[in-house]
Each structure stands twice: as C-alpha cells, then as structure tokens.
Amino acid sequence: MEASPGAADWDRLLAGWPAPSLLQSHGWGEVQARAGWRLRRLVVDVPGGPLPLSVQVGPLGPPRALRLYLPRGPACAPEDDATFLAVERELVRLGRQERALAIEVEPNWEAEAVPAGHPIGAWAPCPSRQPVATTIVDLRPEPDAILASFHSKTRYNVRLAERRGVRVREGGLDELDRCLRATEGRQGVRLPPRSHLSLVLEQLGPLARVRVAEVRGTTAAAILLARRGRELVYLYGGATGDHREDMPNHLLHWRAMMEGREEGCTDYDLWGVPEDDRPDHPWHGLAQFKLGFAGRSVRYLGGRRLPLVPGGVPLLRALDWIRLTGRNRRAR
Image (cartoon, rainbow, N blue to C red; front, side, top):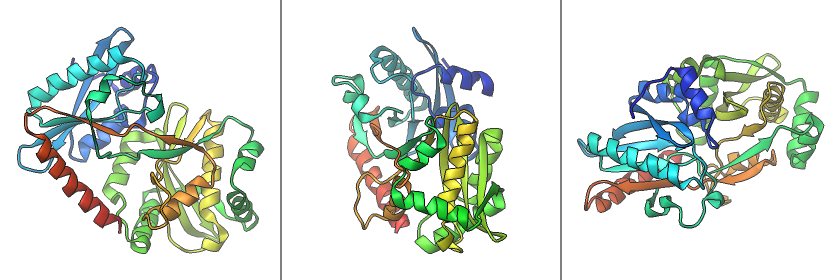
C-alpha cells in the first residue's frame, strides 16, 4: 500500500529488516525527490512486518517512457522468497498504474548469498546504477588491530601524515565542492555537482558530515560521509592536488573510521571499486587506494529488470547502450 510515514518511523521500519541500505532511507528518498525523481513510498504488509520501499519513477529516454527503480532494495533477506514475491506483486501493480515500461531493482544482497532458484532469477540482468563491488572495513577490532590489517604502504602513509602534522577537522560544503571540482579537472571525470552535495547535507542532516584534511593551514582533501545505523558510508571525496606528498587522504579516512567507531559504527563502506583490476580502468588508481585499507570485498547481485510491456526488451537494451556509452565517455 502507498504510505508516507515520517522520517523516524520510516527509518525505524527499515532498520528492522536484514538488508537495509542508506539508499532506502527516508532522507535519501528526499534527496532524490528534490533532484527530479518522482518518489513513491510504499509499505508492503508481509508476515515479517511492514516493509518500506522507496521507489523512484523516472524517464527511460523517449518521451513518456518511464521506469520504476528500487535502489538497494528490497531490504528483506535474500533467502526470503515469500517477501520478495510480495514486493514483486506490489511493484508490478505500481508499474501498471504508472504505465512504466519496466521495473528495475538492485537488492542490497551479496551475489553469493542469493540461493539458486530465487524468484529474482526470472528477472533479466541489466546495467547497475550503483556500485556492484565495494570494500567494507570492519571497525569492531581495536584501533591498533585495524591499522595493522591495512596494507603496509597504506599503514605507512597514515603514520607519515600524522608525523607531518596533517590535521583532520569538520568541513563544509564550500571546501567539499572545491576539492571535487579540482579532482574533476585533474582526472577528467564527472563528479556530483554542488547542488547534489548540498541536497545530501540538507536532507540527511546530522547523519551526513564533511571531513577535511588540512596541511599547514591549507585544505588538501575533503570527503562526504553518511551514517545509517551502525554503518558509515563514504559517498564522495576529492583533493585539491596540493601537498600530496603528505598523504592527507590516507589520514582523512583513518580518522573518519575512528570517529565512526567511537560512535558505535561497525562498518566503514568505501562505496564502490571497479569490478575488475584492469590498469586502464578510469578508477584504477582510486580502487588501489581503497583496497589499501584491506576491507572485506563485497560483490552485489547487481541490477535486475522486469519488463512490463510486451516487445519492450529491444528498446530497453538500446536505451541501456545509449546510457552506458554516455557514462563511459564522461569517465574518460
């Protein structure tokens, strides 16, 4: 059924399920709604209790061609076939109502956790809109043990930054945006615009934070973090390119991990690495940086699509090709 619980009630319901995600939270739904998506919030009544679904309705490309998109959802366990089928029925109902061409979901499930014969096997794979692979650092051990688990070069760089007096402090939108724009220019990639960064900070409120690494009074790097339950997620980051020899990025993430640990977080999600280790991948350098923190490698199931219009599959594949071609060009 369609429902609009308040932010606290929505997030409380979400937290009661085995696979919740920041992207299904009330605040993130508000970010997407203000960014131009039409948001439909559903609560599905199933034996496990009310299950919230934050569904985005948006264009596929051609005029009046719409899709439903469920980012990092549903939050049920991958082995819970009955709940998934109830979600599927509700999404199909909404899709018919919206006259959508297709439904796309990206469950917050690791690929290896999805049992053979799961109903999602009837959905066709489609290009993912969220990172398919990531690395997650376990914050439960003692700090010395966490640091010791890092790759030797990463551990050395953290200590080097400390010796050289790199300072990590609270930052703001201006510093974050400046660092992202500098990274765009240096790497030739496209990062979220200032308007999106502002929306995230505004809508997530105290759950979002900017942390800055400062070298001799000069901002060298900044990151945007978001907390959901016991998970601290690194969303975006950038660096001015100054003082690289002082390793400000390494200390910035290390201090963010320790801050999250003190607040009771158990996971630090570095939010996305390439699915392969090709040296020519545009994000290869960033991946090597993230992997240096020696987190647990996670590979999600990825995108799955259910067409709602007979004969619509060729059109959907053509639209996929157009979107992926444009994304690859922007990444160069």
